[in-house]
Image (cartoon, rainbow, N blue to C red):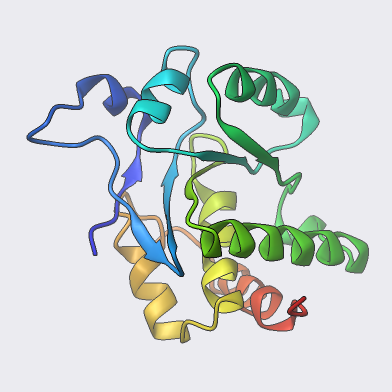
Length: 175
């Protein structure tokens, strides 16, 4: 398994010798983490095999604009409006449980998901970690997978946030 946190500027540098996306296989599908797509990157993402774009941002962060550009490029789109673990309520957790189920279902159906938030990768890293736990990966495997995305994807996440994400994944009901 080869995984990388993708800076969307790298998408324009892809070649047959060095693909711009590296995937983490989960269920029958695959997932990668990346930065917020640029106007030029939507078609490139599609040409690199992305079938679904999952946006971990709020409406104030132009999620509806991302949706429209994803659909225009022929990508399925999932919005995960999530700000931070500290801002989470029990109602928010119920919604996040549903998003974990939807992402898991997409992966079971063979989707290739580009999961992104802002330039920090904090929220999409936490959601990925929660998704790994939802899919019953052990914590050490989920943490190793998160570490393999590079760019300090795991190193900059507070332990409390990782614990919250693991709990979120474990507590989410399986539909």
